[in-house]
Image (tube, rainbow, N blue to C red):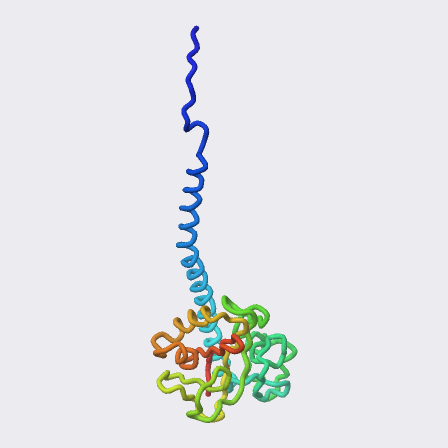
Length: 227
């Protein structure tokens, strides 16, 4: 039987160097076009995670206030007391109190403790911010004087978003989130979710509404509740 031999075509040797360079160039262009979109989607997803956590904490504080009659955490004697660290590792912080079971030995049964019906939230871990940032705190403190100009870090929020001055009554109990290690782009993402339409300029958006951003320290300050 005769065997037929075929001369291999030039294509059987694979891609030429020029073809490989062309393919790599196309891949590089596609990556350059798609990478910003990927990062934007990740940032949006992280912002949505934080926004969901904020709503969870708001609900927890509503329930806590309904029972205890205060936004301040209860001290050992059952007296609501401002606590500035907001660190969940600190037992007397609001972050720790809202996750405390009512049967825990820390519940002494004295004064307001008798009305405590926790836990009000499943978890709060200050060392692990949900979605955005490095750490998350839930401090409680009295508000600055009404109509004081809001800054990145003071205890005042322009909730109406109309003039840059605090709308909270002087000395009101305020519970808020303080989130460290937040990039400007991430701050803008969460601001767009929680404060849509507030602020005509970047500077106004950073200081008006529920979300404030301190560019000097890369921290977010998110209003939760006041009374």
